[in-house]
Image 1 (cartoon, rainbow, N blue to C red):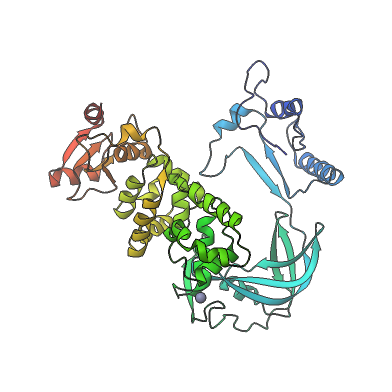
Image 2: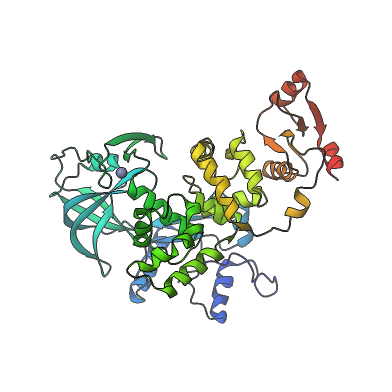
Amino acid sequence: MPFNVLEGLDSPFLFPDSRSMKISSLFDYGFQPCPYIAATKPLTLDLVNQYIESLTDLAGKKHLPIDGIVMIFDSLDYSKKCGRTGHHYKDGLAFKFEDETYETTLRNIEWTPTRFEEIAPVGIFDPVEIDGCSVSRATLHNLTFIKELELVPGCRISVSKRNMIIPHIEENLERGHYVDAVPPVCPCCGSQTRIYQRKGNDGRLIETVHCDNPNCDSQIRKRFTHFVGKKAMNIEGLSETTLEKFLTLGYLQTFPDIYHLNEHQEEILQLEGFGKKSFERLWNSITSSRNTTFVRFLVSMDIPMVGRTKSKILDTVFHGSLQGFFDAASGNYDFTQLDDFGDTLNQNIHDWFSDENNLILWHELQKELIFEERKEMNTMMKENVFTGCTIVATGKLAHFTRDEINSKIIELGAKAGSSVTKKTDYLICGEKAGSKLAKAQSLGIKILSEDEFLEMIA
Ligand SMILES: [Zn+2]
């Protein structure tokens, strides 16, 4: 159900500068846009309350799930001028309803290993019906969450569906009976567990439970499951159960082994549930996954916090060059200069590439794959004076944003450095350059103006 038109439909003759007219025109194209009220007079508190009430009523009558209401400017021009943060436009206000809560009894806390060594807690409670669905499980996130709510099996709790979707334990109605909930050993491999502290988004310390055993079956199975998943290498026919079988039988140890499963064809055909046809289908799917992309490859590597969205950004920044990304990740490239890449993510990438096993995997797996060529690739790796150099850019540039100049540098087969060191070959210097310029001068590093740089790559 559309509630906004992001792009298109913008003929100035058909639609003047009005969001509501644009949205209402969607009816002509067969859409049922999200109900709205176009305010015709200045909003007062009374009026806002009145609108909220009538939209809530309407949603009830039409059986539309609703968790709040958005107030937004009608003038698209004005909206645009309000600017945006990394995630959100600043042209509107959201009014969120409190989620309805339901009482029930917590029965158990289940601990399930994930693929990042963390053992994640899930609360199991007596089923309650919320919005027509029976709900009996909710993630408990981490140890801190359990401790703060003092959750123990048997206590009365209130649960809701956050945003009407995700079951959530809101409150413990019988506090004061907390006993340590940490499982002493990993439920999968029996190794001793360890409590790990990390900083949450709001800066608070969060405790999580970990299994440190890198050979924990469950972790390995989950990593393989992720690897063959739709967003990663997209191999059909390797369910978690099948993977478990192949892992137990020793057909699979590392990801590249998947591409040699045919060496075990005879044995696999003897397995229950495997016929000639199903093996053929599996092998076809494995073979076609060899043709892959930068994004799929990177997602399949499973660097913590690097999912599809981040991989796509990296694909653009590094122009689909795995080598370019590899150089940056194993060098001192500062990923926080990219939109929405924070310190933790930057650290995760560099950590991942300092692990020898990961490096072996990174190179071995590429040997099995064929990468779709990107158009820019041809112009990219042409030899030029900058190939192999380390280049740092500083100051305000006229033709590039920071991301753009760094991609350009990488495109030239050079490394984009974030700070000036003895290893820096060139400093590209824009307006109002500061300490980096001074440092480069003191180290005798070659300094280029933006125009000089442009001339050299022309
Ligand atoms: Zn384990």
